[in-house]
Length: 460
Image (tube, rainbow, N blue to C red; front, top):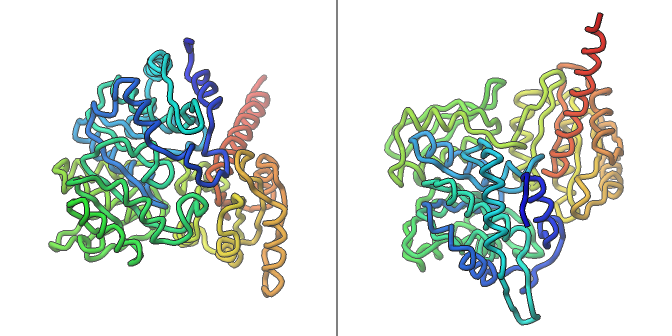
């Protein structure tokens, strides 16, 4: 098999079991590391060819990984960045600190992987077992970074940590962002259980860095670090104060370290949570000795990641954010209302079936004039009708309830939002990265149509 373009390769990969697109509970056969280790052995262990930083957590791990990769790149260190999910294009997952690889490099690595996969055979208790799509994408990332001679790579976990396909690397640092209830059918139904899964990325003697955590999660990380004899750096201890505000020009942050020094930043990635993600990345880079104040801090200010309070239009303002947990939504709304207030705005809202619909919905209700319920993709289970009924029930006791709309089709949901939202009021799309990607695609169609109409008008 030979691929002539990267999209062909992605289509081939999707023929394998894709756990991102299924609501499977935990199964021993699907979530295991022995198959992934055997796969890496078979293709030549490319994960050993670069220094790696491993990032896990419930929220903020993609942004933190992006900050880390940007900081390393600024020092002239060629750095691969592996994150998931993507918003619109699979290329978003495998980048050079946010910059796409050339397609010739992607295709070369894809063909190399498929060639090396020939003859791979793995037997488990149930018979022959082929790799999952995520295992193959992770193997591809490792092979791509090795093939293109990356000196470093920042690797984000896909789900959990203990049995995640990325947990086959031996990193120079393990990084854990805040923990929330998520993927409870797989990771466990309590914060300590979920933290226990994430804690297993901590390797013997490898330093671990944690952001501010709930105490029941923090205890788990402290204990695992003790068992592994790994030094633990706690952002809550290392930072005395963190002051941040969201402005039209970006996220302003002032970080006061425990030694009294202050780092002032203006981040391109907006959102109050980004200040903490950036502080965590700075702590890692400083401790590892890959840090030069002016160069590193300037680089971190330019870091971006799709779907993180991303402004895709200014007239009207359209903001895309994949917040899908209660706390991430709370942080998003704090930043959004600092910029756009609480009157006249519209939210396009869609969440998957396994999310905390009730508490997320209650955060949104008092802040928007219109709420449009849309379908968050078709890959995983969602129930827009049930979500709409929940909203109808919740607004019964409100004095000034928002107007509610059910428009499952993302293209039509965006059209409705743009028709009913008067400038300078804003449109927020949130609740799911899948929905965010669909709304970005819908907006691109609008842009293309408007561009063609302008061309027609301009013709003599």
